[in-house]
Image 1: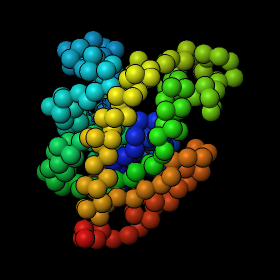
Image 2 (image 1 turned 180 degrees about the vertical axis):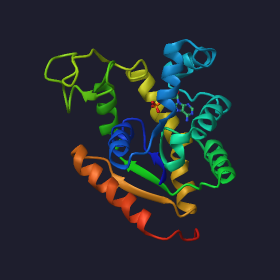
Image 3 (image 1 turned 180 degrees about the horizontal axis):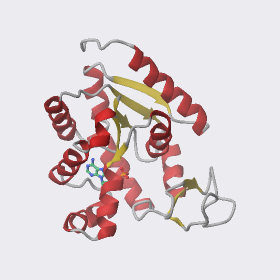
Image 4 (image 1 turned 45 degrees about the vertical axis):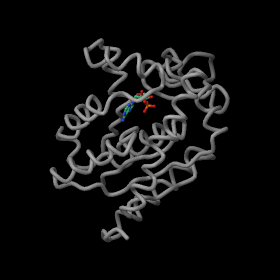
Length: 224
Ligand code: AMP
């Protein structure tokens, strides 16, 4: 199954993606993770992206599309994938449709994880990630047992550089103006489904799985 996960920053896309990877054995492709890896490695691409990311703005479509095309052509993406954080605007969505058409592998589903703005703000300011194993925590809603240490591997917990209040405000505004229109874009294609992204992670995951399994079991229909 080829899936785009849609949702504002803090909606839980990353968490749900990781659970989906384990369950369906298909890769998660996160442009945010790919960009952060490029920044950490100090590549020219990473150097170009760093300041833009820290300001909470979108990295140029050229950079992101180049990265995505390369990633989608890797062998593990042939059995399906979960796109997390991509596309972020209509131009990226159209480019994705063209790329997948060329590959003869159309998108199966755009799944929106829907969360109210005040909840998003609390989640984003409290978010921490383990530097070693990637496990995610939230100091308000799912804190680690020991402050600053990962329960799973003992690694250091890190606050993402773009999870401060000013940048978060920018990221939410960018989502509203550029990414939210994708909901309508995929609705028109007949590919949009939504789940409420509030509550226990496991319950949200059950709802997500149900949508995916329903769509997988339904023969493709022409868009309205
Ligand atoms: P994320 O981890 O998805 O929240 O992404 C973190 C930051 O990386 C974003 O605020 C953007 O600066 C950049 N980024 C990630 N994905 C994209 C994308 N598809 N297009 C443009 N910029 C992106």
